[in-house]
Length: 326
Ligand SMILES: Nc1nc2c(ncn2[C@@H]2O[C@H](COP(=O)(O)OP(=O)(O)OP(=O)(O)O)[C@@H](O)[C@H]2O)c(=O)[nH]1
Ligand SMILES: [Mg+2]
Image 1 (tube, rainbow, N blue to C red):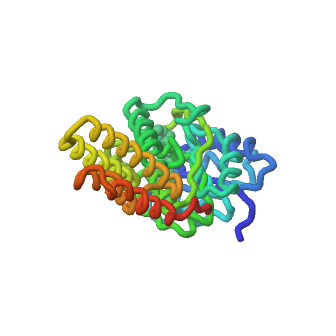
Image 2 (cartoon, rainbow, N blue to C red):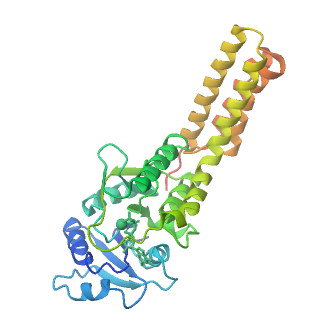
C-alpha cells in the first residue's frame, strides 16, 4: 500500500526563467499536504538546474530526477512516474501555465475512486488564456467530441495537467515516446479498461517566459491515433444505426412505416447511450443493438420479430458490468 502522498511530476526543458516561481507556487499551494516534487530533466546542462540550486528557499520536497529513458517530455514524465512514491501522481508543467491550487482537489477526486482526473479548461469554471488559435481550437473540439460522442469523463482530453491513481499507472503500459499525447493515451486507456475518468475546473495561461517545445504538426498523428481508439466503437455503433435506418426509410412503403423507423432509430441511440453509461464506453458488442432494433424492419416490416428486438438488446445491457472503480 502506497503512502498518502501527492507526487508532483514536473518535466523541465530549459525552464531557468520559470522554475523558481513555479516551485514557490507549488510550495504555497501544497502547504500542509504530504507531497514530493520530482523535477524531471533530460541533461545536466539544462538551465533549470542552476536556477534551482540558486534558490535559498528551496523546499525539501523537491527532488531532482534525471530522465534516463531517453530525451523528450513523455520519457521525462515516465521517469517521474517510476520515481513517484505517492498514492496520487500529478503531472503539471513548469511554464506557469497550470494553477497548482487545483492539485488538492484533483488528488481528492483520485482518492474518491477515479483513475484519472483532468484539470479541465473546457468545463464550466475552467478557462484558457492565450496560446495559438489553431491549437486551442483543435484541442477544444477534440475534447468535446470525445466527451459527447465517446463518453470520455473529461472535456479536456489533451491537457497534461492530470492526476493519476498510482495503482493505475503501475498496471498500465505507456506507448507514447515523443509527444505530449501521453495524457490522452492514459485517459483513453483508463476508459477502455472501464475505470472512472473525471475532471475539475482549471485555468490555463500561456507561458510569458521561455520557449514552447510543443510540435503540433509532428505530434498530430499520435494524437489522432488515440482519438481514433476512443472514437471507433461509438462511431461504428452510431454509423450502423444510421445506415440501417436510412436503408429502412428508402424502402418504406408509407409514412407510418417511416415514423416507426425514425422511432426505432431514436430507441437505438438511447440504448447505445445506456450501454455506454453502464460500462463507461461502447464496445464492439454494442453493434448488436442497432441490429436488434433496426434489422427486423428491413427484412420483414413490422412483425413479431420486431417486438422481440428488446429481448436480446435488453439481455446484452443486463450482461454488461456496472461501472467499475479503480
Ligand atoms: N524533460 C523534458 N521536458 C520538456 C521537454 N519539452 C518540454 N518539456 C517541459 O514540459 C512542459 C511543457 O512544455 P511546453 O513546451 O511549454 O509545451 P506545452 O505546455 O504542452 O505547450 P504550449 O502550449 O506551447 O506551452 C514544460 O515544463 C517544459 O519545460 C523535453 O523535451 N524534455
Ligand atoms: Mg507550455
